[in-house]
Length: 353
Image: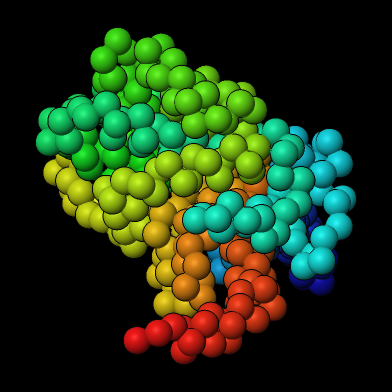
């Protein structure tokens, strides 16, 4: 009996050991599976976290303002006056213009002079001769002219410009060339001259010689070419001749004009801000600028009862020609012209009734 019980117990123990050995791989696999699941979950969490971090960085970068690339403008080439040393010339008023001339229009008395005989590029001062030739040719001002592709290829010089297909009268083209210094209008005026552009340039040079402008040469009507050259003394003769025409006086001193360009009404403004200054009485004016010429301006004006012609060429800064004109005006009024006024008043008193 005892032996039977011991045999049964032994059988049970053997069966239990076998069961344990059978369950061990399953438990091991189960444990590995749980561990793998945990790793997979952790890996998924890590990927999600990484995506979230990238997303947050993208949002932060999107909120940051984009840095604009700094484009440095190339320095402008020096003007001819600068290259020849004219800007180093000293004067009593410390003008920024290399060339300056003020004369009495009626007596030809020189009131101020600085390098007045120097021959330099004159930029859009050229357009004053363009306008004079067109006016004296008695071409119909009401004739409608069309801007062609040839005209539109000319550098405009500003955002306000005439486009191919625009139709304006010759008088309107003349107005824009003088007041707003519109290059395409000036070119068109030369192109539509009898005989074409070459005949027009010949007429410009012939008129210069007739006026005694012997240091002056023109190669085209806009002033974009640095080969258009003159001196302050010659330009004073041109201003004197042009100021004899009421039309040129009116068009050159007009503050602004609105003209139809295609389907739009475009406003053009005078390039010389002094025409809007009540302290100035300007009868005729023209400005000019290209790199080779610097900033230029010519004017016929009246001060202290005297008609004056003022020429400033090769001014260094954007506003310095206007600053120089103001310096000259104040100097003329306070020191040059004012002393003459009491004498004129006394002379008037002594006149017999």
